[in-house]
Length: 151
Image (cartoon, helix red, strand yellow):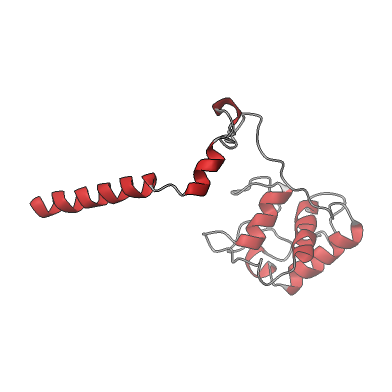
């Protein structure tokens, strides 16, 4: 019990010392800190201060939609999501229900960073331009602009 108390005390003391260890340069910046009322605490869902989400610069560009379809096949996205993205061992990309969001930014993020339930991260293997082309194709599903729709 005494050893536990000593270990906790040492950790607590180290935390206090670390938080009090201010360099000389940091004190010069203290006077320029914003007033408390001016500090942004981050996006609050529904609070109106969400950061702007990037939109696809290639959205509705017919050649990009066709290239996105071609990349979908070449990168074997259909291996998990089905031939026309209708689902397989991966989720359907044709339905309106999206686990991680259906915005351009959310789809780009899913492709680039991957997802924990089996989606691999492609961001280090696929150029950003091609990811946007894939996003354009995926967003065109179930629309009149969809290249090569299922019959």
